Image (cartoon, rainbow, N blue to C red):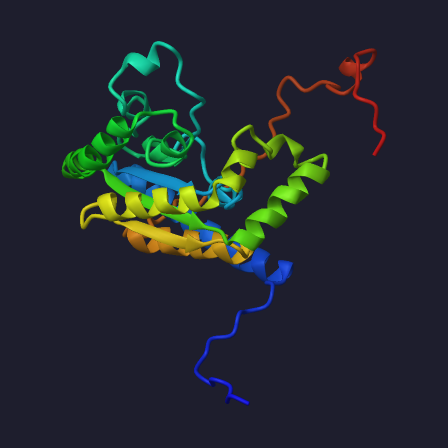
Length: 271
């Protein structure tokens, strides 16, 4: 019987919800400090989230943005291009959403659609796909040299976990809306998507705009690891805040403002 490899790294068990919530709150507090710094310095940050269907992009983005201002952290999730947009330069409709000073724009899928779903599902030609892979690094270099911070994250989910998540979407009524027309074909074309991913990484994982791969089978750990990594990639300092004192309610022009609501339509208090 072969000896057990003592150096092998064992898979960690599922993270407890209480421990996750505690760590998430600490990281979200840091995100608020980062938000102040981005506004103070007028930074322009672009974060790209890509990955297979069911990789957990939506939940990770929600954890990242739920405690910060939507005026600073903007999420962009574009639908399929219109007939007019199809005639534009490919990246044009994405660039229209790029951040101004003091903003962080998060792309829930991005121009990398061309390297993934468009290529695998034959929504673009082979020539268009190849041209994208060749030109994308040059365009991203131009973006970075223009003063933008560009961060690209690929969420990697396993075959087994993707299958489990898709089956949950089929049976759970509060998840069925997540089952898009692309989900089932993406499941059957697992290896086509793997090859497309490999081609994308080979062509566009550059020094000026590297890809960071985030394993996402464990959603809780993936979200924490993602936020922690982003905080390291964007250097920031905590800015001093002025002490705030809540003023007392003025009694000038006081009246019974609850009695004045009598006879209005109220929401039934069932709970």
